[in-house]
Length: 125
Length: 208
Image: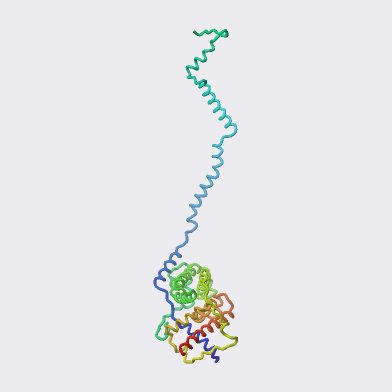
């Protein structure tokens, strides 16, 4: 028999006879916990489905309603012009009422000045 | 089954018959945790022993060994039975060890046997008072052997451990490590030669 081969085989036996390694009970307990966590089934898609559908519906409603909402709040060109005209008329009337810083009574007196005559006479008094 | 090593008695884990193991695996496929626990009990020491010698740090060895069983439980539905459960489990263990080593960029001290040995040189243990058959593995000698295993490259170490500790056949190791059978043989030869040199050096020192 080849002594070299024999020696190498005895080396193999040497490795085999090294002592066994045993993990601790704590290690085993931790592993059991991890495996138990793995055993729990992942949340099935069916459980997520109602929520996903509700969110999708809400998003759809918002997206579809958005253009209509924007149309109702944004004035068209004709409407805007009429608004501007109305504003302008109102402001002008107010300015007329305040003409020369007169109060309404003074303004009415001012209107009665129409009774002055061309030749400088005054018919009112 | 017990094996007597001098004064140390080691209880080996139970080995399931093929059919028994198959039925346990079938139960595991149905997420039966109790059944998987039996597989853990059967293999935990062997996997832990392999991983401990592959990653060195005992803390890493514990983490990686747990990860091996968790991954196995996650993937057992995909275990197709083309190889034995043991081969499949050790493949997971080996891959995780390699991943861990790469992640930590731990570079093992690679001792090339080619540097120490001339081509065709035969190894004969000079001191024939060393008889491995009857030798009691004392603590010091065990440390030498473990250290010598630890200084091998991962490639040599994995083959040595799977063959000489696990008793796997060449083909089974080739499947587990995804390498050709010839490569398994050559790596085993180099690994044993490296170990023999270390043991020889130790005994030379003891004698002188």
